[in-house]
Amino acid sequence: MGGSLNANHLMFLGYGALWTIGLSLIGLLGGGIAGFIVALCRISPSRIVRLISTGYVQLIQGTPLLVIMFLTYFGLPALGVTVSPLMAAGASLTIFVSAYLGEIWRGCFESVPKPQWEAAEGLALSRSQRMMKVILPQAVRIATPPTVGFMVQIIKNTSLASVVGFVELARSGQIINNSLFEPFLIYTIIAVIYFALCYPLSLFSHRLEKRGGPARIELEAA
Amino acid sequence: MHKITRTDTASSVVGLSNVHKSFGALKVLNGVSFEVNRGEVLVLIGRSGSGKSTALRCIDRFETIDSGEIVVCGHRVSDPKLNLRALRQDVGIVFQSYNLFPHLTIEENITLAPCSVKGISKAQAKEQARRVLAQVGLEDKLHQYPEQLSGGQQQRAAIARSLAMQPKVMLFDEVTSALDPELTGEVLKVIEALAADGMTMVMVTHEMGFARGIANRVVFMHHGKVHETGPAAILTSPATPELAQFVGTGL
Ligand SMILES: Nc1ncnc2c1ncn2[C@@H]1O[C@H](COP(=O)(O)OP(=O)(O)OP(=O)(O)O)[C@@H](O)[C@H]1O
Ligand SMILES: [Mg+2]
Image 1: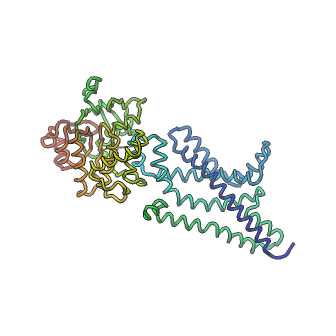
Image 2: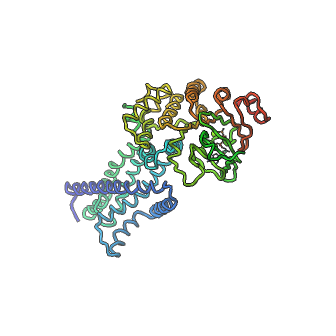
Image 3: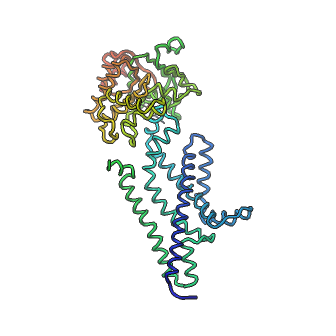
């Protein structure tokens, strides 16, 4: 066992933190794209599309991310598909995030006031024109604060990727602790780093909420 | 009750014939028939809940009807195979709530549909935006956002946005009800000018003085039926006690 915390350990933690950020970005990007599709499906005029997407969301929201990670990392190889820890963690996060962001964004679409939808319909715009030119720009404004807020959840949830052997921040802390055995010190450092990543985002999200979204800021500047 | 036939659609722009509509167990339209000819202004009046908005919304197929027939500019609205977007190019509708698109300037609000739906050029659409805004007295507001306008100005801009699609008939649902009294006049004046220009219109309003001045025909709705109908004169000399009571209360 040995030694005390040194620069190499801190470097290692730094790499871990970078992977945490990287994995979060993968989750945000993948989950964002998939979540956008989920949100569109949830408000589709087709009943069957709505039913399937609702089922998907309920299934994912009712499954712990940990179990999704196990399924992709250990379950898929049993079916003959081998995946690396990065792929398993990235795919699991994408699936997880898509269900939650999909729901958040569905709510944002639906909170664009009904008269706006009807005004767009009354002007003979097609469904895709209504979505792209009238509803989406307003929904983005509504969606920004909760989406930034949800990024905090994504960052924290990446720590679960350690169970499939992915060395992100929490896992690198564990590894260092295994050799140093200074759990209080090391996990305090880990906590501080997570906080440093998450807190600015929460703060930013709250500020956006108060100001009524980024579009308003632009308007005021104009 | 008269069935709309192919022969009288020549001058008939909007025709409802024996229209029934329920929301669940609530019967809202209970055999409504009326007709609006080209260049006519029809004013729908009646107590709150009598089905005025529903009747208007059925004309633009924002509600589907249970039975009866609605024909608008040759479109059989009650036909399930209706070309909805073709109908809505012929019909302009303005609601009580201001519903300009808040993220677009007034000019963008107005040019959006002509560019996207009719495919006319940006330059042409902008030229037209200037023209319809002049029509409602807002030519200086082209580059403002809706929130920078007063309620009355927003309603006039919403009317201009509809006009830019060159509709054959305009529907107005209590467009001044959400406005401060001092702002209703400017909106009503715009509508009067439209009527003088020969625009065919169906409107719901609680402004009785205005209705008297503008209506070619008044339809008084009561319990989901056309209870009394006739020229604007029925507002001053009603035939039924229900209409007498309605105009008597000043509502
Ligand atoms: N989408 C809907 N679902 C259920 N009920 C509805 C719906 N729209 C209207 N109603 C009901 O139908 C009845 C008629 O409504 P409508 O809006 O046509 O009345 P109105 O004559 O326009 O009244 P007001 O003067 O208050 O605007 C009301 O009792 C209303 O609550
Ligand atoms: Mg109404």
